[in-house]
Length: 453
Image (cartoon, rainbow, N blue to C red; front, side, top):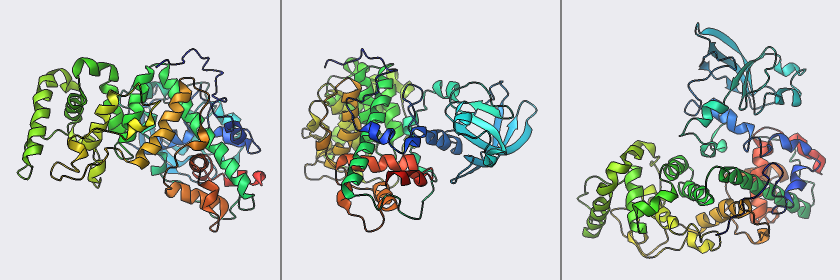
């Protein structure tokens, strides 16, 4: 595949691939730009930083002020879902003497956002004592600044892509259904422009990743993360990074051998046969071990533990041991998948197309269902093709993903309980509802949409 990489990333905003995205981004509701950040500065939202700060599993432990004073978080604060500072009543221990300081806490991408967002003279921010920022920069007088960029960039296990922003508290607005009076055709057009903006932002994140990794490796990591679904997205992405695509040809010659390596690295390769296994399963696992033990010494430093995976409540068809077989085939198809999306769900007969678990056989079935393949086409392949320079994308014919709680909640909040689902039956419109959810619902900014009507 010939990849287009000779582009000016500062100026190339993928407007040709997603021409209607600007209608959403720069329309009457121009304030959306605060939550849809500039690609070349930081391709994520402040919401990602808020989730990171609230979750002790994500928050760095070696925090310090801009001046280098160590920080210990006694209480991160109460997440404020209304207007005002992001976290209220935080308590931090500062310096070697661990002096106890309390106050509100505000989070921004750049230190200068404090003034740009109008907080300087806003009385709601008078008790703010802490300013958590991604990029370091000029401090705001009276605030203890806590930069995150250096800590996060040196953590090999951290990725903003692993933060599910919908898994954290957000405000559920009630009220006047701001876009209920809008004409149905205008609703669809606006949602589809928001959908193009969502795909544009995904494209910019992939293009940024391609600056430091090969396009194939970026696609490999994205595909594996998608196979992990919601609960195991992080370990799948980490597995793709620790066992890069470029390393596979020297380690394995077939998808079955690649599967043995991936399963061994994952820590999910069964160590002892189960008495209830069939002879076919026993022989298959034995074959996997015969290959894995030869490579174990070279790869053991990368191996996972069973505890790295979230396996409780997972349907057998979605279990990582099954999805890793799909990943093994993707490793040999990576060059062809962007042109032939059917390769996402088409697999030859193998052990996992005829088994739903180690113990249960089933009728021949795909390793990746149609709904998951459709989601991967829209959320990965289309942005990836745009990121490598393709500008003529057929956006109107994207496969429609199933509805979900975010889509339904956002549509109800915008248009009222008696709206017609036809307004968002296209794939782009559904992507748009997800974008609106992140831009307006989670941050309680629905009042900014009234100018659209």
